Length: 327
Image 1 (cartoon, rainbow, N blue to C red):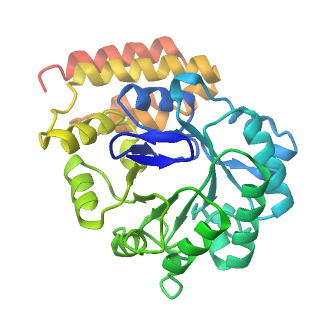
Image 2: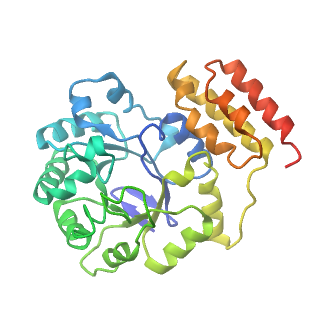
């Protein structure tokens, strides 16, 4: 059993990573349908929250069917993070996660996200402040360190545990590495096998198949797995991974008809939560992944990525199902 605060998982949890413009309510809905054990909101700016920015406040919307669900916040000013944590807690998530791992330049160069790894004392101050402010479990998602010369995760994990966090997710890359190269899980394993570490350690990075999930779990002994980019347009990966971990058997890929049905459902939920045009704009990256590798797909892809009419999108989906029905 894996326990984070009052949240208990009977089996190794397979979680959906928080991703900006990806893990909105519509995508979280689909991932939960396929068995994601825990989902997270898109990461939310502490500055945006305390200024009541409409986009940031809207990201606090969570639903009971998502539980357990975490709200992830980021920032580099202790006071702002404290206020944002209070606002996040009022939305009644199951935990609050601190983002010390996002490497996107516009966030990291301000000293937030992975940029916090350049100022460990401040990172720890923010962590302690949030832990002391809220009654919910506080967790952290971070990386191995800022760059190749500063892979501090082993010592940082101990410090974060001492600061009061109740679980730690580690992405196996540095901040400057962005998403390039391969994730290095060796230091994740070192943290997990550190006798001083008693909190759950969740591994993240390059888990893109059931076999890879099994390999990382067996090799490094982590308490949980987190899937990010590999879930985009593939919400069924959670079902596939969990089935393989339980049985050692691979589930087949969804049929094209099933993928079209999921794309329709995803669009319906996206429009329900965000309306037109934003609900369509944010579906576009998912459409590309739902129908990846279909031959001669470019003309249909262009139409999917340019129309703002739900009726036309559904017509294109009909066309995809008909044209590629033999695959």
